[in-house]
Length: 462
Image (cartoon, rainbow, N blue to C red):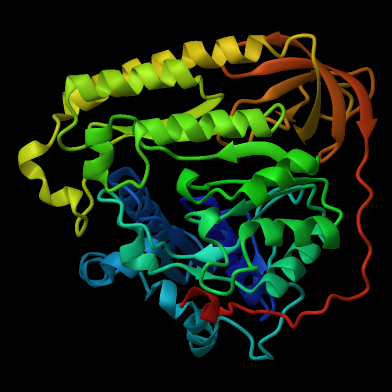
C-alpha cells in the first residue's frame, strides 16, 4: 500500500502521526511524498480553533478528490476534529472512507487490513515512531489531556483529563529518537508542569528531565508549554545547572489584566506573574522566556487591553505568540455571547499587540550582537554553494515558532550540526551569525533498547 500522510495541527499531533506511520509501515505500507501516488491518504486533523477546523476539512476534500483522478483508493480521517465532530463529519463528508477518533486509533491497522490495503502480521514494526521530515529535531509527548478548566479551551473536551505516560517508556522512546538522529528533543504536553502528578510525588517533569539527561546523549533538551503556576524550584535549579537543558521556557500567560484572567479561569494574576518572571530571570542565567496571549476575550475592555500592553512592555518577553479569541462550542466562553468583542476590534487589538512585540523583539535581539552563542543547522546550503543560504536557530529560538538565524561560514554546514557562533546582525525576529566552530554530533549506537515495540499503543491516550 502506497501511503500519503498529512499531519495538521500542533507538535503533539505530529507525535501521534509518527506513531501511526510506524505502525502502518510495520504492516507493509510504503510512504510516498506525492499524494497523487498514494493509494491511501491519511489525514491527522486538528480541531483547536475555527481556522484549524477549516484547514482540516479543506484538506480532507482535497484528498477525496484524488479518488477521481489519481491512484487513491481510500481517504482516512483521524485525530482531534474527528473525535469532536465525528457524527457531523460522517454526515457531511460521505466521500471520506473511514473516520477514527483519538480513542479509536488501535482500529487503524485492522480496518485497513479488512479492506485488503495492509498486510497481515504481528503488531510490531521497526520502531515505535518514524520521523516526519528532518530527524534532527524531535518532539516527545510526555502526557495526554489536561485538567485545567480554562474558559476558552475545548481541548479537555476531546483529549480528556491529564494522563502522564510512564517515564521508562518515555526514556526508551527518547533513546530511539536519538538513534534516529535527534539532536534537539522538545518535551511537549498541554502543561508540562503537571507531568507525574497522577503517578507519585517523585515523578515530576524535573525528574523526567533529569533521567533524559542521564540516560541519553541528546545535546539539546527544550521544555515547551509549561504553566507558570506549576513551576517547581527543583526544575528551575536543574535548568540553571545543566547546559543541555536549554534555558528556554514557553510559559503561556494568555492575559495580564486580572478581570480578564478571572473570566478566563486562569490560575495566576498580574502580581504573581510579575513575581514569578522576576524569579525565573534571576535564577536562570540567559533565560529566554516565551509566552502566548489572547485578545478579544469576552468582556475584554479597552482598559484591560492597555493593561496587557503595559505588562508586555514591562516584562519584555523575548518571544511571544498571539491570537484572537475564537468561541469553541462546549466551552464556558462560548456562552458569553452578550460580552463578545467584535471581530473588527479583536483584529485591531491583535495588530497593535503584534507591533508592540515586534519592537520588543527587535530591541531584545539587538542585545545579542557581539555575543557568543550556540546554534543548530536546520537548512544547509545546497551542494556547491559553500555556506551561502545556510540557516538554523540559536538555542534561544525554538523550532517553527521563533525566528531563524542565517549563518556566515567558511566551511560547509550539514543539517543537525551544532555551531559556536557570534551574532553580527539582528532584525525584528531573525539574526545573522558568524560561525566560529562546528561540532558534528556523534550519534549514539545501541544494539537494542529495553522496551517492546509500542505499535499505536492507544492505552497511552485513554
